[in-house]
Image 1 (cartoon, rainbow, N blue to C red):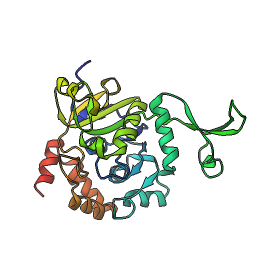
Image 2 (cartoon, rainbow, N blue to C red):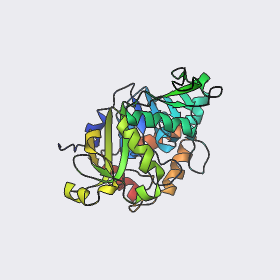
Image 3 (cartoon, helix red, strand yellow):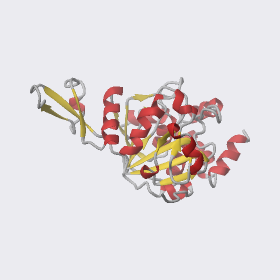
Image 4 (tube, rainbow, N blue to C red):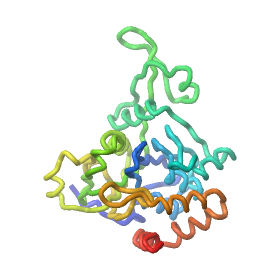
Length: 290
């Protein structure tokens, strides 16, 4: 095992223009696995033509859209907490500026599962009429057992996956802690997204010793061999929350939502919270002072 610690600026250099980003998301729970530190740095570095794959497209995807980073987005739900739809995504979809593809929760999960298992597809019975026309990469084939038609849901294989965890060691072994007990996405979907990706950027609230990781192996959901970069990022999910560390910052979420209603106001938001802070520590100092 090697030491994979680096700065977020160094880690985001793994993201090339035109990449597909897998963003681990909290599904329907409020606990975040979303690395907002990485998302802000991607916007700060001005990455372009990205495709985001995220179970639930919320603030993180909306920020990338508003920053001009997105070409396309794939999701099974698109919402902005209890405030409606993500403003930038909605506006840009309506203007034809980004491509959006909505999945069912089931087919999205199967694609991620296939990627995590390292297989090209997972067979599914059904979905022929409502999904197949929107997925030219999917195929139908006869079952080798009874000849009935099956649908091949192709694997999701991101170029880079982003995930934020409560704690990890310097090698990339990561634990979800209380999030694992509360969040089905932490137990299932996020680890498969990580295993499916070609590269993985992992940000963490704490970096702990490997010996401590070994004392609670049942909480280790991500293993070192899947991770390329480990970034110490306390508060790295903000304005989302992390169970046992901090609650969602609802005031900031509402501030973002109001700014994203208008492109000019959103440019000011990006200037204040993305471009002006020199590093994640400066961002934390800024939001802590509000």
